[in-house]
Amino acid sequence: MTFYHKIEPAEAYLGLDPVLYQRIAPTPLKDPTLISFSADAGTLLGIDAEASQKRDFVDFVNGSFLPEGIEPYAMCYAGHQFGFYVPRLGDGRAVNLGLLNGWHLQLKGAGVTRYSRSGDGRAVLRSSIREYLMSEAMHGLGIATTRALALIGSQEPVRRERMERGAIVLRMSPSWIRFGSFEYCYYNRKRAPDNLRALAEYTIADSFPHLAGDPDRYFKMFAEVVADTARLIAQWQAVGFNHGVMNTDNMSIASLTIDYGPYAFLDDYDLDYICNHTDVEGRYSFGNQPYVAEWNLSKLMEALAPLVDTDRTTRVLFGFRKIYQREMMGLMRAKLGLVEKLDEDKALIEDLYVLMQAQPVDYTFFFRRLSHYGGDREEMLSLVQMRKPLEAWLDRYEMRLEKERIPRHERHRMMQKTNPKYVLKNYILQEAIDAAEQGDYRLVNDLLDIAHDPFAEHPAFEAYAGPTPLRHKNLRLSCSS
Ligand code: AMP
Ligand code: MG
Image (cartoon, rainbow, N blue to C red; front, side, top):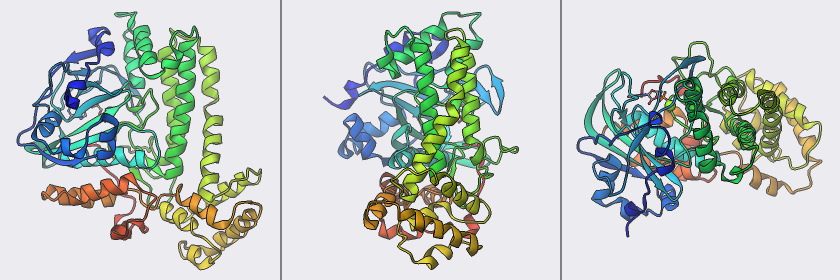
């Protein structure tokens, strides 16, 4: 039996009110070819590289081969986009196939649906490469995310600012429910009063099964989303990831990083960095992400108000900052190789960030080099323009390290497992995109290997581990995808 026959229809979701989805088959692309297969994601589904080489696999990802029993559908949701409520969004270019080993499979770029609005239902190769690689890269970094199994390209022309080619990513997630899914039910509750509760029950069964039957389950679900979102955002901040479009429809109820658009990893550390060039006000700037997450949670809280007492959820939401700060503290201690927990650490950490904010310092490279730091000052000082503040900080850091009990080599080993050597910065992705648009997919696949193991040495790609070259620094990306 092949894996195709093990895919089950998403019966529980399709049992909800049909206003919450549209049954629709994918619209295949012309002349599809497999660009990349993630064997690592494949193991989760029982699909190996050999299976991915068969013709039916490309057809499967293209949506032209629909194994028997599959009931494809697009999901409806709403959301606050840049602060404003949009009453109906939904999968405008994604078609869900069903469940395999607990993963909801979805084809992104598979044609128009009822939720496409003016869109063409397609995704271009450029944005698909970005989504595909970053889904796997975040996982490699140990950050909760949706995954990507495969990427196909095609000859189908798709119009954006210029003519491009259509592509499809097979995405997989334990859940595709968004904060905006609840908002849709909440704002339509006059017409369909039962949908909010039904969606909450569905979500609890699907993503919070340990809460099933608990009389206080809606409250507890919200409390978990608050805590897990705080943890997720702390991880983004610690690694220097800017999502770029933190609308409530791009916030996962399972607290996963979801919907990769104009995201970026920081080049130089900068709280004010904005990766999305349509975000003129910087609502979704790097430094705003924790605040935006909190605001988005408040929108989820409002949507859950008919189910849970708002006094209680408000109190939980007030706890967001504490959880975030605690989480951040733990992650930063790990980045600095501090095992002991001392009160003085907070100031040590904050002062390092003040120092980095004040001048251009490549964020990833700085911490990676610190992960090898054995007292050779010049190695660190050569990374900054203003040496004095860093010198003073290193004095304090060295004094602090004396209070650690683990040997230096052990600390370095730990730090090198926390501070990635490689993050897929935008200029690196762009090189892979440029080659892929010329039909050369090698770099996409090489970057996939790096994405899966970003803490290791990849000698052939040493150049990508250095500070971002000046001409490529702090680019801004368009939302168009
Ligand atoms: P995003 O910014 O990618 O999260 O998308 C926001 C909304 O626009 C979602 O409802 C998408 O499904 C929809 N959308 C984005 N691009 C397209 C497209 N090319 N065709 C149809 N719908 C789209
Ligand atoms: Mg989205």
